[in-house]
Length: 165
Image (cartoon, rainbow, N blue to C red):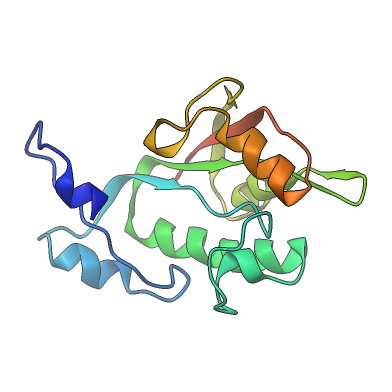
């Protein structure tokens, strides 16, 4: 609804397709636009179970542990690679997790898993989220979510830029 209400500033088409990204048919979706491949894929998965997005057991935010999260997210990366042109880029935006007094480097575990899929790491951008505005211009959204959810107040997330060879 929010995307549809945005003022169009260009000829870019923005469509929201709801589904399970581990099982949806990416080729069929692209066929609807008359294309077979893309040059850029941007993935921004849930940070494991920090925020629950649904009650669906197939939702990545409902995986039982980090290892299962990585197995499921690997499926998303592998499916994305099937539509990504050679020598082009897959970007992952993800942060870390803090649980029971332990920092879990979810970002780096995800990056390592992506390179194990055959992607080449080209760059790591550390995005500073301190003092940024969240959705609908809400200040300190991360701090609020962290305090409300009882978890560590992260002030960064990673943007991993990977290339398909």
